[in-house]
Structures are given as structure tokens and as C-alpha cells.
Amino acid sequence: MASPYRINLPVYEGPLDLLLDLIRKQEMDIHNIPIAKITEQYLDYLHQIEQYDIDVSADFIYMAATLIHIKAKMLLPVDPLLAEMEQAGDPREDLVHRLLEHEKYKNAAQLLYQKQQVEDHVWSQPDRSLYGTDETQGELVVSLVDLVKTFQQILERKKNTPKFELKHESVSIAAMMDRLRSKLMATDEPVSMTEFFDTCETRNAMIVGLLAVLEMVRMSAIVLIQSELFEDIRIRKAKMFDAVFAGPDAMAKIEEQYL
View 1 (cartoon, helix red, strand yellow):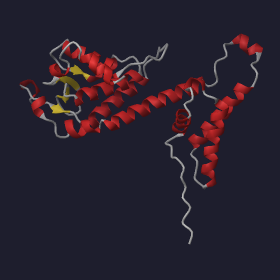
View 2 (view 1 turned 90 degrees about the vertical axis):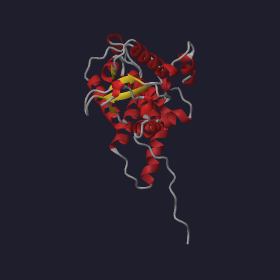
View 3 (view 1 turned 120 degrees about the horizontal axis):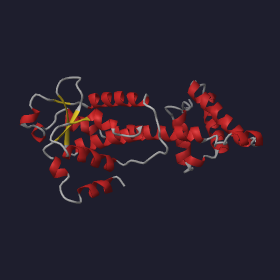
View 4 (view 1 turned 90 degrees about the horizontal axis):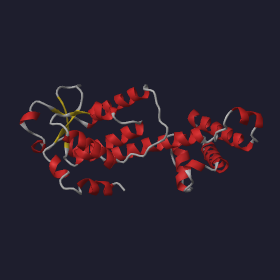
């Protein structure tokens, strides 16, 4: 009896995942996507799925239509009358922006997954000798779930604020750690996590800021606390704070870790 036929197709969470995988595996320039080639490969993947009677979600079909539309716009000659009325942009620009944003969130999610040890080793059974002082009596150590929920609320509120981003700035985790370190050194009081994230100019900066907070917790430099359940999360210096950032080269060494 013949062995059952095995299907070996990569699985993607959505059309942007598929496009990113095609682009990165072939080391294409994401800012200059060869749209004809990538469209052909994208459609080929969908055809393979259909051959095995696997339902294709509407998102994948919509992206296929988008790629074909972009391809058609790039093949058509530019109308000189329209060119005089308005500056013709690159038809791929919106897609490139969406891919870059998706990749940022995907990378952030992967980093958060890798930092699961923060939940396991810091919050689930925290070594309170690193944090406990007379000032912290009665305060609650925040869980990773509480932290993510608060971050999502701040992120949602940020969506409703007017955007005046002229360019996409690159912000490093080390730079965000230094920003938070400076805030904590400037006061003996805990720093509101909401206020810290409000100083982040872009959503990308907020994500990097969250990773910086997680890294400083992992290093035992800070502890996240609440006065009461559901209250604002605050960031307090831990006992190891001075030791972590001791010496003039401390931040330089941290910067090297993320190069």
C-alpha cells in the first residue's frame, strides 16, 4: 500500500507574512520591490494552496488583487496631464510602509517571546531581596500580562492622536534604556510607565521602549509596581540599579550588545 501523500507547504499568518518571507529569502530591497516577480511568486503560492483544496482567506485574495493593481499601474505610461496636476508617487509606497510596520511588530513579538524568562524568573517568583525596601512595602509586583495590557491601552490611545511624522527614525533599545535611566536618576520617586511611553514620538519608539523596560527588568535594574490592583504601573529603581549602570562605560557596553 502506497504511503499517504504529504503536503509540505509553508504556513503564513497572513499575506504580509508571505510577502516578507519571499522578500527576505531572496534578499530583495524592500524599498525597491520587483513587483512583477514578487506578484508571480505570490500567486504561485496561492495556486499551490488551491490545488490541495485548502481554503484561501479573503486577506490573501485581497492582497493578490492589490499586487496586480500595483503591477498594472507601474506598467501603464504616466498621463502627462495628470503628472502636471499632481506629483505621481511610487505605487509601491503604501505596500512598503505596511510591510515595514508589520515587520517591526513581528520582530517585537519575537523578542517578547524570547523574553518569557522575565515572566518566569522575575515576576512569577521574584527575588524580593532585590526589590524590597521600606518604601516598597504593600506594593504589588506587576505581571507580564498587566504590563502588556497597559501597553496595548497606551498604544490604542496613541492611534487617536494626530501624527506629524516627517520621517521614520530608528530608535535603539540601548537609547531607550538610557532615556529611562536618566528619568529615574533625576528623581527619587517612581516614574509612571504611562508618562514614559507618552514621551515616545512614534509607535515604533513605544515598542522599542517596551523592550527596553523588559531588558532592564531582566537585568534587575528596575521593578514594576502598582499601589493597588488596576492602578497605573510605575517604574522604580531596584537595589541593583546603581550596579547595573556603574562606571563610565556601562551604557557603551549595553549599546554594543544591540549592534
